[in-house]
Length: 67
Image 1 (cartoon, one colour):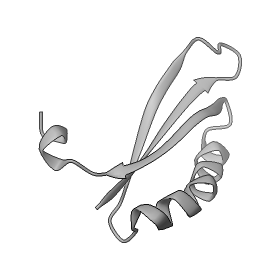
Image 2 (cartoon, helix red, strand yellow; image 1 turned 180 degrees about the vertical axis):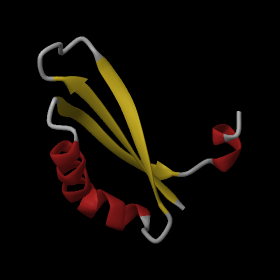
Image 3 (spheres, one colour; image 1 turned 120 degrees about the vertical axis):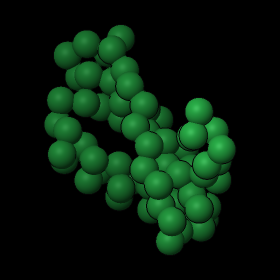
Protein backbone atom coordinates (compact mmCIF):
# COMPACT_ATOMS: atom_id res chain seq x y z
CA UNK A 1 0.00 0.00 0.00
CA UNK A 2 1.30 3.46 -0.91
CA UNK A 3 0.91 6.73 0.97
CA UNK A 4 1.13 10.21 -0.54
CA UNK A 5 2.34 12.87 1.88
CA UNK A 6 1.40 16.46 1.02
CA UNK A 7 3.04 19.34 2.90
CA UNK A 8 0.93 22.48 2.46
CA UNK A 9 1.20 26.00 3.85
CA UNK A 10 -1.41 28.73 4.07
CA UNK A 11 -1.13 31.17 1.17
CA UNK A 12 -1.64 34.14 3.52
CA UNK A 13 0.61 32.75 6.29
CA UNK A 14 3.46 30.75 4.72
CA UNK A 15 4.80 29.84 8.17
CA UNK A 16 1.61 27.94 8.97
CA UNK A 17 1.95 24.51 7.41
CA UNK A 18 0.38 21.09 7.81
CA UNK A 19 0.84 17.58 6.55
CA UNK A 20 -1.91 15.72 4.76
CA UNK A 21 -1.72 12.07 3.82
CA UNK A 22 -3.66 10.04 1.33
CA UNK A 23 -3.54 6.26 1.30
CA UNK A 24 -3.47 4.92 -2.25
CA UNK A 25 -4.07 1.17 -1.92
CA UNK A 26 -4.32 0.47 -5.65
CA UNK A 27 -1.11 2.31 -6.66
CA UNK A 28 2.53 1.35 -6.82
CA UNK A 29 5.26 3.80 -5.81
CA UNK A 30 5.94 4.52 -9.47
CA UNK A 31 2.27 5.22 -10.18
CA UNK A 32 2.11 7.49 -7.13
CA UNK A 33 5.18 9.41 -8.29
CA UNK A 34 3.69 9.88 -11.74
CA UNK A 35 0.20 10.78 -10.47
CA UNK A 36 1.02 12.78 -7.35
CA UNK A 37 0.74 16.17 -9.07
CA UNK A 38 -2.76 15.33 -10.31
CA UNK A 39 -3.81 14.19 -6.84
CA UNK A 40 -2.26 17.31 -5.28
CA UNK A 41 -4.00 19.57 -7.80
CA UNK A 42 -7.35 18.03 -6.84
CA UNK A 43 -6.50 18.56 -3.16
CA UNK A 44 -5.68 22.24 -3.80
CA UNK A 45 -8.98 22.57 -5.68
CA UNK A 46 -10.74 21.49 -2.48
CA UNK A 47 -8.43 23.59 -0.24
CA UNK A 48 -7.70 26.79 -2.23
CA UNK A 49 -6.32 28.69 0.77
CA UNK A 50 -3.36 26.26 0.95
CA UNK A 51 -0.28 26.00 -1.27
CA UNK A 52 1.63 22.76 -1.80
CA UNK A 53 5.23 22.91 -0.59
CA UNK A 54 6.23 19.27 -1.02
CA UNK A 55 4.95 15.88 -2.19
CA UNK A 56 6.35 12.50 -1.24
CA UNK A 57 5.26 8.95 -2.04
CA UNK A 58 6.22 6.18 0.35
CA UNK A 59 5.22 2.70 1.41
CA UNK A 60 2.43 3.01 4.00
CA UNK A 61 3.60 1.80 7.40
CA UNK A 62 0.43 0.66 9.16
CA UNK A 63 2.26 -0.04 12.43
CA UNK A 64 3.42 3.59 12.64
CA UNK A 65 -0.11 4.85 11.94
CA UNK A 66 -1.55 2.85 14.82
CA UNK A 67 0.45 4.76 17.43
